[in-house]
Image (cartoon, rainbow, N blue to C red; front, side, top):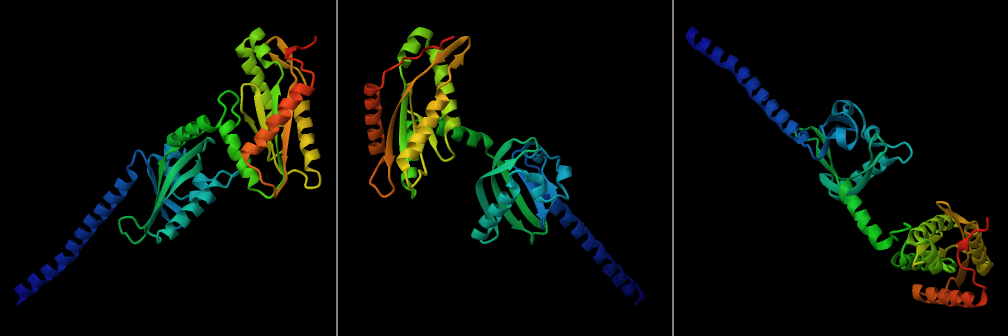
Length: 325
């Protein structure tokens, strides 16, 4: 009996040992899984318990500029927030909205904008997964996949399609979209066309390099002279267009003329290219659209072009020339 009792006692005393061993192996398995989640060298992985980051992958250093050890104990907002933009709040809200739409388990939100500690913009696809009930994680996993290069390529493709390569302003294709958008709003608008008198002679005398420099300076002056909400486009060699929005309801034509006057004043001072100082004169054509009238980008541009041609006939032309010294 004593032997049996001792045997049973020994058996009973080995149970806790086996449980501890199983628990330790389970913990090692859990730790291994968590470590594998954080081992990614491409995506940045953060583990959160509530709002606090408890673990971060080494790639956080490249994506956000934070050492992984310094991420721990901070909130997501502290790691991503730009005080000037409140970017982290937008990220968190977007992730929460995406998670709710997916039933709270896992969701992805694309093209989110983050700010690196050096101030550079970083674009990511972000995935949130609720693993609070998974013993190997016990928190929420947020994964950021860096798509900055892809976004940059998309932007370059977009710019090539909708931006003038020389001046950086909108091109003719973008102009049509801008007019369409303006026509869809409850407002009076106008389209102003202008070109440089004698621009071909400038290229002949001084060369296209000087001519291009004049166009760039002209685009800069035009953009700086416009009001908020107005849009500039280059639609020809020496031809620009301005979409004038939110005209005065009481006198839209006068309001459009005032914008044209501002543009003309901005272009009046001579333009300097190296040691060359050039004076320019521009010719205008304006088409005004009143809210409620039928109009399309084509009809507005056609009317403005007619006005431009009439101005060329009625106004004495002064080709581009060296400014009087």
